[in-house]
Image (cartoon, rainbow over all chains, first blue to last red; front, side, top):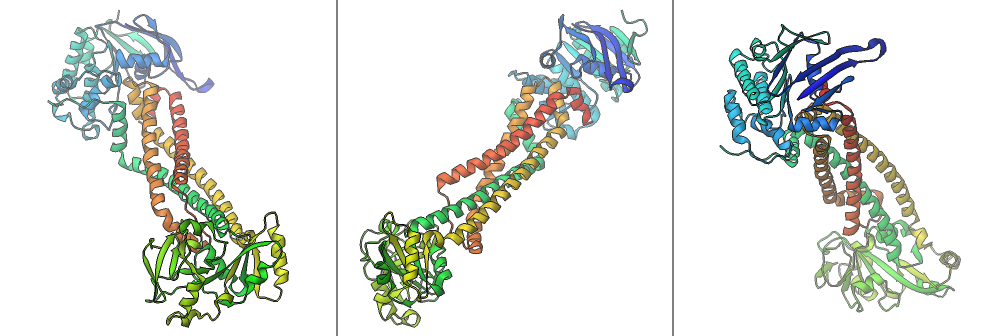
Length: 223
Length: 403
């Protein structure tokens, strides 16, 4: 599915150069949950951004389904059809309702099929059914995070990349999201995420720990 | 449950504009201000140029002779339609007509009507010899017959129509023709025969204002046409020499409007400078505003990119918004200007004492097109710069820079 090979990322030049990622390789296969642990600033988000093509690596290679992805437009196509990204922070468009935000990627990709019912069902499952006509400015940060998860799940992509999808959520909601991710996994969807959630770690196929830009298998779970 | 309305690019553009009304209104206002100013200044400049050209054309004379004391007044009457009564009983026409090189002479007599109950309104009455072969094309065009007693041909700015009655000095006149718009004094004037002027001067009310004893010898100005191939400046010099001792001023038509021409040149220079400064300033403001606005919306475009919108789609959204803002702004700017520019032009006409001839519909459409194009160029540059800059930034940084 997706393989990241010897990924390096550095900012600045010469003496001021800061290396964020130092030759990271990781693979995620269909139906797998791969989790990455690590302290804040260790480079987890940078790695996930590189995996989705939101950020260019300084060095390294990314392949998806065996094809090496280099061009920006190839990543855009992947984000449109194959990869859904749940990032940290507000990722909803203010001018659309919650329900519209969930369906937006579907329409951006040029699809015409009406997914309203499916989107509403996802919202109901996440306990947000009553917020479907609300605008992002009218909901809390935790609710917005759940809407992002619903958006990622709606299109049933091949890969979901999620940056701490359950952080700052109450235990019940975190469990709901975890259950949904597990069901996605059962459908063959691959999940690459950063998390500190023990529940998430328990269902992960492989766990890595990111330390100072390097990735090590964690607790013997990684192959 | 109700189905969602499909989210198309058009809908994204519409929502983006509608959900940020202040931002949208500010941008429309700026574009509107640019086109309003461009259109207004261009319109007035064009009116001045046309007014002056029209004056030269419609005077239909090579030389003009006016009494010295009434020089400014007659200019204002002919060019601006400011009513004046010039009573000067001298038989200059014969004197001038006999000078070599002079083809035709048309004596005219000016009578201002009064702002009193005896008159409909203060207008300039111009009496001329209807028997003369020197009839101006403008007059001929308005009325092909010979003006009878108390018959008048009115200028375009007067509210009368052919067949209407008009009241001047307590006497009833009949409107038999209406001249087309010239931008000069003719527009606010009414033409009558010399005989009517004489008869009028003997009526109860008018005799107190301009009693004429000898209609043959009354004159306010002479319009002179010279023989073909003859230099009008040379003939004007000869007229001056012949009429030495008479209190008259002799102008070639070019000299007659020279002061106005000089004024138009000054206004033109000023308006060109103003237009240039205005355009550069407003265009720069529009470009900067677009750049700032799009820069501030980097996160929004980053989110779109993260959910699969490619550069072309994002650019189409930005361009679509810009097009809507540009069209709304420029059309309202030009529309408001077109609606109000006449009032401003009237004020300017009083202030500058220049004849104005408003551009026709075709010219107005071309002017509007130029103004809209000017605004479109500014907007396109703003959008182009913003899109180029955004395209250079990686999507993650678009999202992060605003967080």
